[in-house]
Image 1 (cartoon, one colour):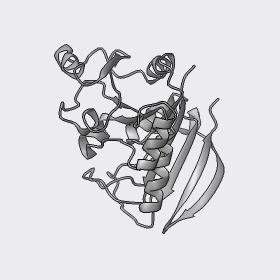
Image 2 (spheres, one colour; image 1 turned 30 degrees about the vertical axis):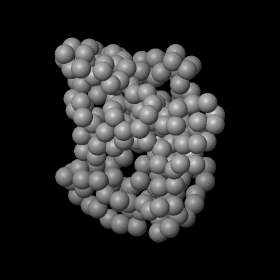
Image 3 (tube, rainbow, N blue to C red; image 1 turned 90 degrees about the horizontal axis):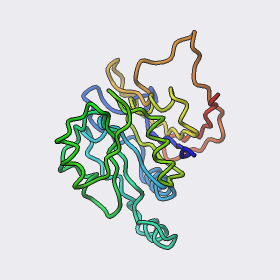
Length: 226
């Protein structure tokens, strides 16, 4: 059984997740960070694309001691499994996600990834090969399900999220909309890629709830997969 997939993003009022230089922007505040930490702590795994790793160097660890203790009390690692989708194994060996915080890591690559890079990565992470030229996300989810992973939180970026939505692999989306405008036709959105066209239909959502948080609003959506 494939994992249940929850996407969480923070974006500006005009739908941007960072600047045109791909520089990280603090869009939400302490209350939303706490919410995200709890969402992360309740997940079996946290997934990002290689673009997010190269741009932001995240650790994807659970920051709250209370949340980490809660995970340990449930008999699981204090941090969820961290997964990087990286078709050509571009992740730097010194990346924070491979070293910070206890717990397991997975790097998903395609068959065109350099075997020497794969061998080097295996010192820090389990490497899953899925797909020929790009990571086949459906195959990856099947493999994660076989490993007993039931809930995956996705934190970006736009290319990975677009691929997951296109493949019908996303179940829920949380979007925090902050009180700023970033602008720019080259600034990334939380769903990039080629985009949907009218003839093929759009991904439809059902709004489950809304919450005002600090100077922004949180929208919680269910994804209507066919």
